[in-house]
Amino acid sequence: MVEVRLRVNGADEPLDIQPQVSLLDALREHLGLTGTKKGCDQGACGACTVLADGERINSCLALAVQYEGREITTIEGIDHPLQAAFVRHDGFQCGYCTPGQICSAVGMLAEHKEGMPSAVTGQASGGELSPAEIRERMSGNLCRCGAYNGIIEAIREVAR
Image (tube, rainbow, N blue to C red; front, side):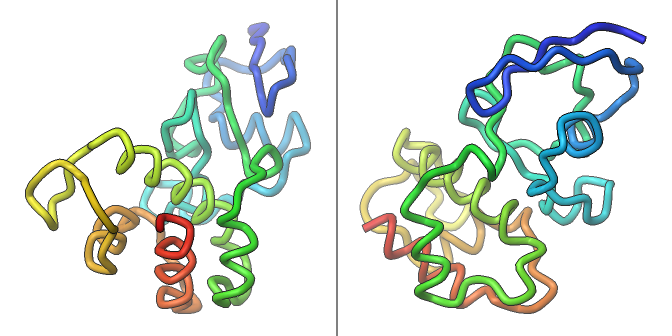
């Protein structure tokens, strides 16, 4: 066991865990923050997306000990207009992927604002996000119900 101090949603959280515990399992099983979902547990679906110092990561692929001293934000710590936009545009159906989609979209909008380039546009960001660019930037998050049109419209609304 190792002692790890995580900063999650603005609170310091001391944990005694095995060094191989993923950040996802630390959040869900040790801290009771079950909004972050375990989908594929292989980094392919994005259901486990959280923000680490504002950048989106797959928490199932991260060891909790690696994130000591960094600010982790889970869906429970998000207060963002995207949440209401997802409801307005029916950007969720079963809701399982929604926490990861929202965390990823928050991170993606910050990346776009900072000028990170897109594979779709081939240049640094600027201007309005097109549906194609949103699809590319959100491609690491899968929705098994197919609510993609609502997700894209929710993100476009907030990005404007």
